[in-house]
Amino acid sequence: MHVQHLLKEYLQIHGYWLLFAGTFLEGEAILIMAGFLAFEGYLNIGGVILTAFAGSFLGDQFYFYLGYFKGRKLLHRFHAIARKFREALRLIEKYGAFVAFISRYTYGFRIVLPLILGITSLPARTFLWINLISALSWATVFSLGGYLFGKSASLFLDDVSKYEYHLMLALAGFIVTAWLVHLYHMWQLKRPARERLARIRALSRARNGDT
Image 1: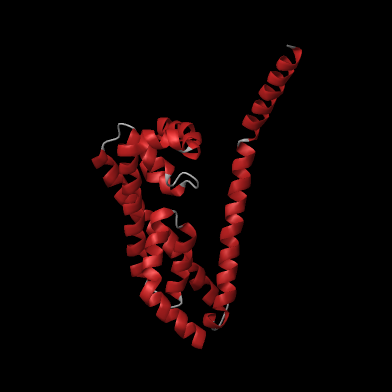
Image 2: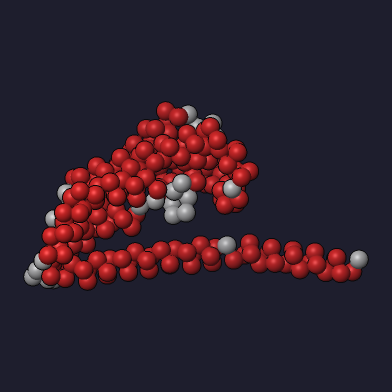
């Protein structure tokens, strides 16, 4: 109980700032966990949604204007951004301005897509309105996901607070598992490209050997 009291005091003081910082960057995992902590009474679910909305919205606005003013320099300086540039352009060509809405739902492109959209001709006002709607929906969905996880656990456990650490570990395990499955899926999708690249390199070495 003493540890729970200390945790509650800490989260009441720093919890929303930590959540804001996490959602300014990526934040799905920390937001789901915050939703569960809201169910446990450490945070307020309305405050969690509002904080996540603010962090997510301001984060993407920052990345958009970073791309608008410094995007082309960043492409030349950071190869990681340049590697994702073509994939991001394909998404933009396929979905148009709707990419601004789905960017925070696409793992690995959360930061890159707003940045690249800032380089394109998408009007800043259009991005702002789409970003507002997207940030609100994202904050609500993932916050309630964690909250409903706790609610579901209460249907099977008489006193959820006795098992909250076990439930937090289970929730963290689920998040990590989903992340690993996503990485494996992305690795499989890129397998044909890796095989083509390996064949090209082998052919190039063979030609250099002949000469």
